[in-house]
Image 1: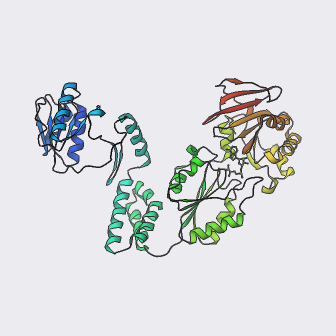
Image 2: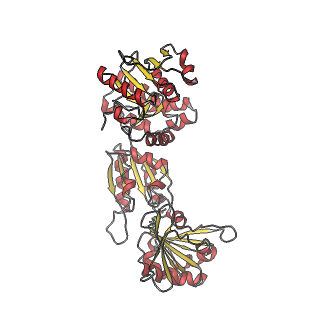
Image 3: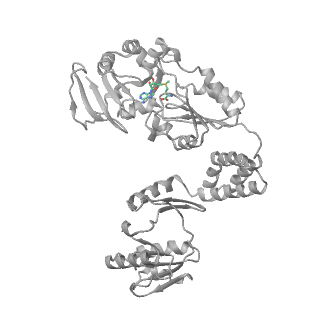
Length: 485
Ligand SMILES: C[S@@+](CC[C@H](N)C(=O)[O-])C[C@H]1O[C@@H](n2cnc3c(N)ncnc32)[C@H](O)[C@@H]1O
């Protein structure tokens, strides 16, 4: 494994061998770093010719000759010529010159990392010469995450840091300032060209340094399970939170996105398990924020869809705290989508109702029947504990033949889907061993699009008469899909 450093090349003599575009690219990079550069190229390409005006560049129009590396600090051989590569490497070794022979990792003292540059901020990506392609692909991803606003933002944070140091503000009081700058809306202002507003916001945070302040609370939706369905805002808040109070169902891969110093508290409420009292949870959020911690309350799906997020928001606002709400992808929509069931479809379904199957959360038989009759597609969350009763009510309201599906562990590898007419879905679910968390979808849309069979057929034994089990691609992740017919 190599040792990552960035080199100070200002005024140092460097040399590039080669006459093509790659040599020109390397030359440009070295000139940008302030090197005194010699390029040796018998027939320089147009890009190299264009660099001739650079005062720090000497272009020698000839081939490489042993001895050319004398007095250099660093050399890059971009000639692509095996013989030159061999000689240049041997000469560099002998003279103690740092050398990189392009595309020959075994002949490199250093590897040029792929770079993301945003003003004073540089992110270098190195694969120790294993795969420049991979380094480039990762750079492209990082470039999308670190937009141009990170350049002026880094400069602005640097300015705040200089002034805090001049004022003699202790490090322990500086760190919360940087954290607040990072969590603030300043990058949004800079991205949208509102430079004055960005400066104003930064000054407000800077002048409050050292004064006790309450932390903020973010009510954040974690989506249905698959971490790739988290919003960018959720990712950023998780990375910066001091403490994260999360539901039990939140995927460990999502929790792994929290910062290394973050305190993780499982306050999950799962059926049949002793769970934290809602009042206790709200009290914890308030206490942590009042002590100055930036808090994330991370909830499965969307925080305001049967997630008690509304009650928490009310209590936090009453406590006078600053609260942000970050919506999440609700399983009410994600579960049918991941099973390939469109909840609305032209000519078939133009209305959708989402209800709870849990009486504790407000389900009532009369309302359920009325809603089922009124909506084209019905999505029932928390259906399993009362599945038989719910289905009996629905059969009474809309008949036994309305297509139904249960989607369990949607978007996760363990995703399972059972489809059957309403009158048989309870039986099919029991035979297939459908377990929590699961979402019930009822409506003609369930059968609208034929199941995509991409996998091998699994034996139907154990699943029930007339019920076919197949391995199918069921959404963002492949999973086992069981079709009851
Ligand atoms: C207390 S509710 C919370 C809903 C959540 N706030 C949301 O928007 O998805 C929990 C119910 O969501 C559904 N659910 C959550 N995750 C799921 C998943 N991965 N697959 C299917 N259903 C899920 C189940 O019906 C579960 O009983």
